[in-house]
Amino acid sequence: MTRVKDKEHFDLIIVGAGAAGLSLLLALAHKRYKGRILIVEQRESFQNDRIWSFWKTSHIPDYISDKLNYKWNTWSIEADKICNEQRHPEYPYCSLPAETLQQLALNVIHKHPDYLLVFGQTVGEITCENNQWSIPLNHACVLANNVVDTRIDKILKNSANQGNRLCMHQCFYGFEVEVSRSDDISERTVLPLQNKVYLMHDIQIVKEGLEFVYILPFSSKKALVEFTGFYKYPVSAQYLKDKASKYVRTFLGDISLNIVRTEFACLPMQNVKNSRMETHYIFGGIAGGAMRAASGYSFASIQKWANELSKQMIKYDAIKPYDPISPWYRWMDNIFLSAILNDTALSKTIFLSLSKKVKAGTFARFMSSEANLRDLLAIILAMPLWPFIKAMFRVIVHSK
Ligand SMILES: Cc1cc2nc3c(=O)[nH]c(=O)nc-3n(C[C@H](O)[C@H](O)[C@H](O)COP(=O)(O)OP(=O)(O)OC[C@H]3O[C@@H](n4cnc5c(N)ncnc54)[C@H](O)[C@@H]3O)c2cc1C
Image (cartoon, rainbow, N blue to C red; front, top):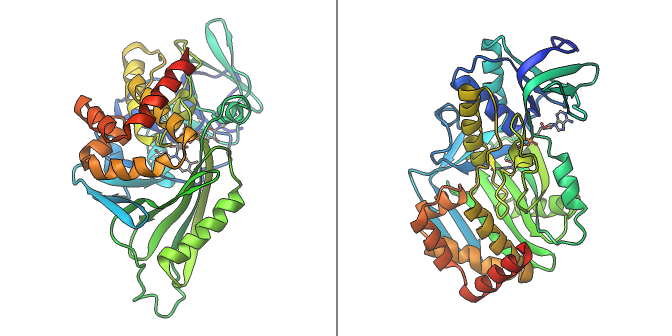
């Protein structure tokens, strides 16, 4: 192992250099945190394995806003040939490839001799010795006053083993494609897509759940086409891949295309309880409950969380658990999930109704967990009444 010595001491150790770990590092650097930070990552190097998309609301800090690769002011939801478009110039839908965030973090690390990042180190069981956290790496043990743990494997495993309580899963397979350069006519060839985000298109109700296609047209020659489903049980990558291939052809036609990248995930749609409530050692990112159960969005919540934690570190040199998603959203997401678990067909009505009856700003703020009371009321009024009242009672009974 380079650079890190056995028993070396840090003010903060971050386990995992994913969205949460890197966002926390950036927030601390932005506030000129002077302590020693170590980020430990089990992968051998960074991978550009995903693209984070979100509405640009107030939680997105300027140093990320300045680097956003893609922005769209319009997004749409379509089912049964009914297409509802929403447009908001102040809250554009944006995308940030993982490599952009990783490069921002590397720039910060190069500037700060006290910020270190090590790859290829799998953190084991973290223990407390003499008021210090002891973090076992592959060939050494490092010490820290504070630990932020963003490992999500345990949480995903717990959810997979949740035999008794049904939970929806958001599963998706995406192809990032571009018009083939070797194609003689490629200079003139453009993708037949409008300049908007296809947030949920061709929504279909199937036996296992709800399916739709999500498309981000990055340019006239490049797009992400992602087949997504909300399923009662996780489905195989191959099933999703086959469906995604079909949609590439349906939406992009017979143009000669190169596959730039693929992405796949199966995320449990449930409110993750932050089980570590101690000062000095907390869970962060999805492991800390930063993902919205009903949508799978977490990037904006992670920014809010990183901002709060960095303030704590600057002020007290200590971290406390912080939940970036208020209980209201968790409650509303549970009601939504209970309603669609009970009657999957309802989800199509809900998404069409939301995109038609609710204003674009309200929709963007709600999806970003930044809604005000008026927004929340508008969302509730846009929902089908009886199924939601029934779902609300189920949630209340379940939580007792
Ligand atoms: C393909 C994909 C696309 C997504 N798209 C969006 C999106 O568009 N918008 C959105 O809001 N959300 C999206 N999400 C959901 C969520 O934002 C991401 O999963 C986000 O990366 C979560 O950040 P995290 O830091 O909690 O977890 P991760 O980014 O997964 O980071 C955890 C890190 O911990 C490391 N690690 C694990 N175990 C160990 C160990 N023992 N020792 C050391 N390191 C370890 C992992 O290698 C990983 O790098 C997407 C998720 C996926 C998988």
